[in-house]
Amino acid sequence: MTTNESTEQAVHVVLVPGFWLGAWAWDDVVPHLEAAGLVPHAVTLPGLEPGTTTEDRARVTRDDHVDAVARLVDGLDGRVVLVGHSGGGPVVQQVADRDPGRIERVVYVDTGPLVDGASLAPDLPADAAELPLPGWDEVGADGSSLDGLDDAALARFRDRAVPTPGPVARGPVRVTNPERLRVPATAVCCSIPSATLAELAHPGPPLHTELGDLADLTWVDLPTGHWPMFSRPRDLAAVLVDAVS
Image 1 (tube, helix red, strand yellow):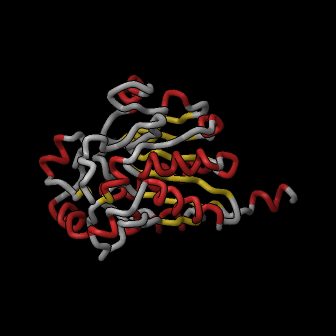
Image 2: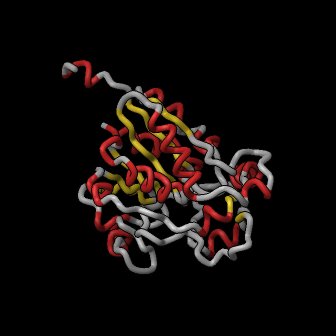
């Protein structure tokens, strides 16, 4: 392959949303990525499809989510950048763990990679089939800022939200390949400033994150709430474009 051919490879940006969200969450981001010449792939993870029953969600595991994204990546021809928002962060982390050489960069949007064995909702009861979107007061109390979302945005969010499968929410992250730590990464800091998050970026509590162990990490501040794809979609897209370039 010549150098010129290499530079013309498609750049695929795989967009993995967090809890309760589907591919629709990226609707206001995708056009800006396309305008920049990137090829976005917004993902709806298993169990998050509209109309999925509680019984079906109860059977969806974290491995099912990772498998779905890994299959998408396997079918792409060109450069691949993984973007994970919130609960999607550990999903893209695990995809990179499986085949780190295939991933050009991982972008963590108000999230980060977890240490092996950690989970996002460890206290969720073992018999809970799903985790519905809580009330807004509870969401804020749990540390997920609603800044930038007006009443109309919150109403759209709640109307389209789908409960997250229980086994996914409480399921532990499993990573084993040390090469995952060498994949270049970007941490987009929205509800917590990068200066604060950097001090917490270690394997212990409260975050149990691998951010501090990443060999090539770029910090980017995008001050807003926990859902920048809703509150600052154009700016989030610009951050992603810069991360890819």
